[in-house]
Amino acid sequence: MNASVLVVGAGPVGLTMALELARYGVGVRIVDKLARRSDKSKALAVWARTLELMDRAAVSDALVEAGLKANGARMFAGGRQVGELTFSDLPSVHPYVLLITQDETERVLEQHLAALGVVVERGVELTDFADDGSHVASALKRGDGSVEELRTDWLVGCDGAHSSIRHALGKSFDGKTVPTDFILADIHLSGSAEISRAQISMFAHADGLLMLFPIRGDRYRVIADLGQASGALPEDPTLTDVQAVIDDRGVPGIVAHDPIWLSAFRINERLVEDYRSGRVFLAGDAAHVHSPAGGQGMNTGMQDACNLAWKLALVCAGACPSELLSTYSTERRHVAQEMIAETGKLTATMTTKNPLLQSVRNTALHFFLGLPAVRHALAAQLSEIEIGYPDSPLSRESASLLPKPHAGERAALPQSELSAARATPRFTLFAEATDAARQFVNAWASVVESQIHKPFSLGTAWLVRPDGYVGTAAQDGDWNALNAYLKSLTAK
Image (cartoon, rainbow, N blue to C red):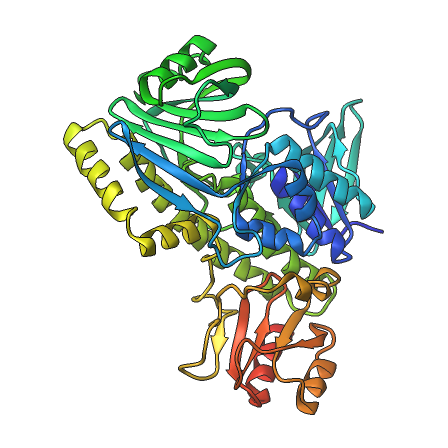
């Protein structure tokens, strides 16, 4: 199959992009300049909404098998537990956060991609590209020095925070570096019954924040801030450094041993103005970076890929005009913008060194985490099931006061209704299976699944996008509204 899309970068975002395109039948190639997959754990959390999207590619089961389900998080402040979150009440088929090392996430995605006939081309670097308005001409340099000239319809840059594609496009990566030093350790912990194997533990201490994420066995991810940055990034911590922070901020008795990966870092909060430039797109860290608070960076990037892939697939198939692709940046940039703002505020609150602000924070945490409504809202926000596109040009409703889910909102689909969504990028009709409904799906067979699903409630019909968000809703029987919606998407 000739390649219509070249994906550059084989991290979780690039692999998700290639996997989504391949399962939609789009010819795709994926290259990475590294000779082999990284063995570093890096991003760790896979949240419910990402797993729901991965269900559509039949990948989630393998990810879950390789990871650890955490059902909640505990917060300690002032030497006592001040609150607890639970994810088990999430209205999702994945009511937990999956803690899985990034190298394992990449392994699973790469295996599923290979099963679709697409192999990651490693040791291959994009050295140049040019968009002539009808194609993208790319120069691919291999480890032996040979160069391949490749022409594709589209190019997607998933090449990370230091994206060479973003630099070549001249896109400004606006934002800031947070002036705080952090340490990260993938390490083995033992010795205290206070650290749960099924929960994330967070300690808000006068000296700074300490977070413990269980991985597997007695392996944990440890993240802590060291305070105001000064000069160059500090050297990577030692085992002794990590143990000292744990002793100072955690519960007594925790012993760190056998480190796997020790690193120091600073947080960047940056965002490009537009994720698209002609026939070239940016996704993941190439387009946005933010605080790791909440563990949502990789998830946001993988969801970028799921958003763009179905749109590219419909355009490549000739079912929709290329104008559909402009909604990618409109929808996903807003999500990243809000994520940067929220994680930035959370990081600043949890790392403040002001004693008065610490006291106010600790009191507020104890009060608000005692309210069930607050706990449920925070769990839903972290899990990303509340992400939606209500202001997108693809979100429309034909009447007021229609029942939920509203246009732009996530449609919580049971796994039994995902089989049709795996095959091709199609909208799904949720309505009464009348003769008129069957005529509608037959008339729009190029962009609507043939199977009609039961409506979420009687009296309304919904068209759900291939990525599981409501495109439009109308009163049942208002086929003119549904027809008008699809005509606006497919008109050329």
